[in-house]
Figure 1 (tube, helix red, strand yellow):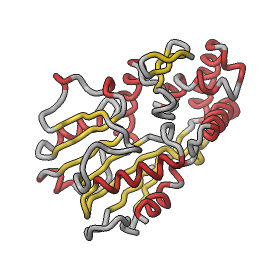
Figure 2 (cartoon, rainbow, N blue to C red; figure 1 turned 60 degrees about the vertical axis):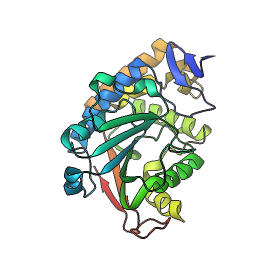
Figure 3 (cartoon, one colour; figure 1 turned 120 degrees about the vertical axis):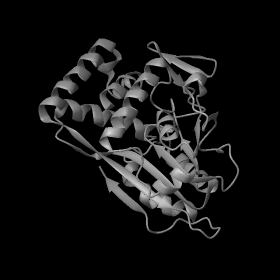
Figure 4 (cartoon, rainbow, N blue to C red; figure 1 turned 90 degrees about the horizontal axis):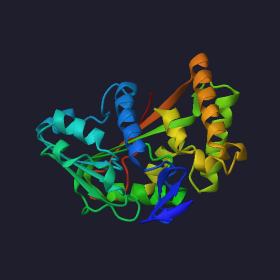
Length: 279
């Protein structure tokens, strides 16, 4: 593992500096391409782009935060659909952002940290959308992140959190089970809660008071748990066996969609009516 320009390099992939982020997946061009494919998959999986009851307001014009926006696919699709609304993407790795020629007039992308300080004033956004940070945040960072989400939301604003629930992955066999067990063990060793999707409803309340492709980038980390995976060819063969097993067993994974509304009175407590949709 080498470190250059605040990034770590291992086995030909580039990762975030561990002092800045615990994000387990790479941040290179290959990962950006995977995130774009994942966005298109999520649209099909969730039957649309969002779940909060804001269609009329989005058409009229509101201010939206895409927290942890990555390459910005969600913001770009939403901005094209709702031209009167403004979409602001924030991520700690600006090289992922869309090329300026591809950005729409009602989008903005800013480098920022979702844990320490989202770079916007209090009560800025009508809607905060955040998804798939299960490989990125420690337990304490989740607490800090949700408080930041709440801070930048306007009273009466909505938040939507989307995370895979790995505890409800159905149909996988021993090869896939080995992969998942290694991921969860490594997450735990890094202080990252492996089943955060099942905890988000409670954490929200407390705050106020393309999967196999992703696995490819985890190899340099997971070999600490399964030493045989230090051999890149062995790990590659293992993932191929996972693919075959998943197709044979028709493996599927539950996705938790949690929505909540900030009280309209200026207060740092969540509306207790937190909705959870399992897809």
